[in-house]
Structures are given as structure tokens and as C-alpha cells.
Image (cartoon, rainbow, N blue to C red):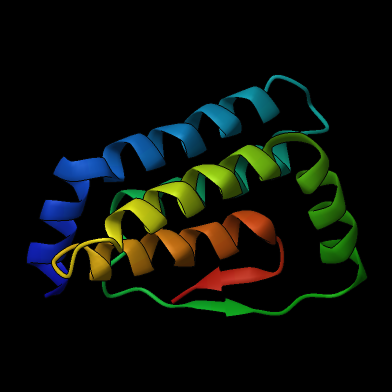
Length: 119
């Protein structure tokens, strides 16, 4: 399901999800201080474009907590809402449930992206 799921995902909504992560990364990279956050956004844009077959592991320390708080104040909430709404709409049908679950995975990542690794 990984390859076929990723192709269908990209055509029917993954492009929009990944594009919002790219836009957030570009906005963060405008300032020198925001470049590490922007680079993290670019990594997660790759996950948003093709999420099937990838797992997210959460960890981190005090630095991750501080960056997650800063993240939530600026671009985090809109990205969480976007993914949660798309996930809810996709879970209405039986065919859309796997895609909705991927959106919920991305919504959780959008809530706390720092300290997370993609495997």
C-alpha cells in the first residue's frame, strides 16, 4: 500500500498539505534565528507529501519543549487545524479512512514537531 497510497495521497490532497509545510518553512527562513525551525518544516514537508510507510518517533528534551511552545504560538495551530479537518472529512467514507489517519498523524506532528524523528 505504500507506493500506491503515496501516489493517491499526493494527487488527492498531499500536495496541499506538503505545500503548507513548505510555506511555513519559507516564512521561518526569512529570519536568521528561524532557519533551524524552517529546516525542520522542510523535513516534515517531505513527510506530508508522501506519508505512507513512514513512522514518527517522539523524544527530545528541554530545548524541544521550548521550540514546540514557540511553534504553537505562530504556525502550529493553523497546520493542526488544517490536517485535523482534512482527516475528519476523509474519515467519513470507508475508502478515505487510511488517508484520514495519515492526516491525523501529520496533525499530531504539527502539534509537536520538535524532538520528533521520521523513520
